[in-house]
Image 1 (tube, rainbow, N blue to C red):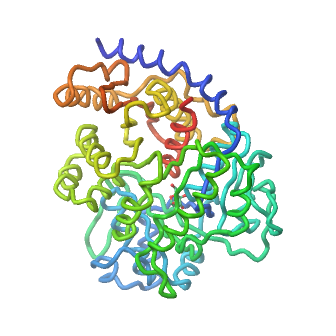
Image 2: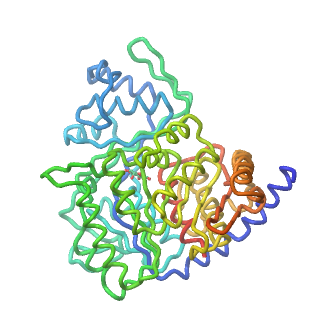
Length: 477
Ligand code: GLC
């Protein structure tokens, strides 16, 4: 089939997007937990960072030197930024010292505040897509954060009295604002330090996070109690926020014990709706002990996993697949990623997992999983359509903008990746038509792969993965 025909074929497949979006309105309840926070977004230039370094007389050797991926000093914050800038990569480091938080506030500032955290972002997306009751957990809910939730009456959390209330209207006055700095930079920008010029190869972001509550996976008891009630019928539970945990937390508490406590709680939530789907958005978990514990302990109870390329490689690193992780790292493409997914599938036995990468989404699931391959494909196409609307317009705050990208053709990048994947799957499992149908199944597994719509100059990338994973799953009906 020629490329033109293929694009035409996918355009036909994508035509189901509006109907899938309508079907999301049939979902009664969904819980999005645990992390919601305020994102303070700022676009910086290399020049402005040079100025901050000079004005504040920062120690260059500590900015250019090695160190752990956490922020104890002002230099650490700039060191993290510089690493991302010069490699064009995305990373998130935790601010361990309140003084650095104050310093960033004064020197870097922000352009805009928006809803952040996987839990917060997913909740907004699910609510605007029409899910009937979206319950979002907030470790903290001061007005500054609540007002970043969409003003929708189907988007709920608990108020200061422990009652369910519209999330955007809650004002828990004594709660602390949890702020994450999203420091974005442009491709081609330069920064000159110590006589050396660094050029940024890819637009991306560095996140510096001050969040003492979500750091320790603080769970609001009132929320948890409400979610265990019989009238909360959550057909889906979408989890995230574990990525901020450390092996050892302050006060001698172990990260692992927090994970275990949450497991017990989620079990209670599931009682009123035993057939619900539990999804974990893996996210970038820096602490390897926590990462391993998540994979070994939490994943056994989840039905579905979501990750990007980086997060998949991170998983491989802790399940004894260091060699494959290195191979993936050296060459990130649909084939190496799929090989990685097969290993994660084997290791965890999780019945569904989805990767979102540049140009392609890929789902691997157990034969006969309750979401069929075609439902998955439809959900993934809706997700790609909505993600393109987010990239193209910057905001998906109203229902009418969600299908903004409807009618755009899928990308060449995605089709190339899919074509390579088809060949690989042919060698490994036999003949298939992944390239034009996006679906392959045999007696034990189902593979669903969808080339996505790419937007030339994305207005934003923050929260893209969360949007893709949640819409792919809940839109798969
Ligand atoms: C991480 C960041 C958060 C951001 C989110 C986007 O959770 O801490 O600030 O909104 O990623 O996925």
